[in-house]
Length: 135
Image 1 (cartoon, rainbow, N blue to C red):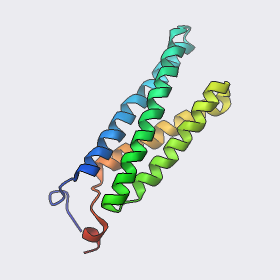
Image 2: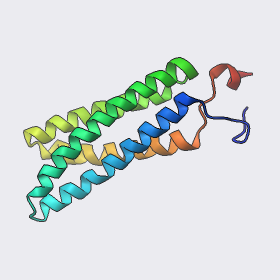
Image 3: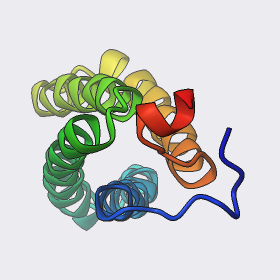
Image 4: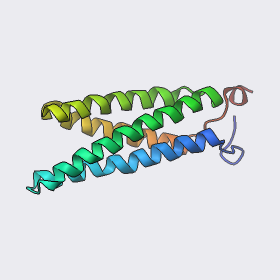
């Protein structure tokens, strides 16, 4: 097993970490913008809608980096977890457009929690190639 000191992150790992970090920063603003709107400032809804576009786009970019990690480093968990988060964000996006707040709000909370766990795992856990890990 590789120790943290023996593991040197490869470019696909850095790309995934950068994507999940940008995704985390973007999604952190969404509850703030929603809260601004709910306090009566209607510009908050415009910010929340623009933030949804950014969050969803970064989620798809993260999925591309997760595919690269899967192909180059033979690690499937980043792709599987990113796919789940991106699917939840897509459903949440359309639920928000339709005004289905009964789905939009709880799914948003779960999505932020899932992405937070993914962010921590992406930075804490090295992504060694499967052959190196099995050796």
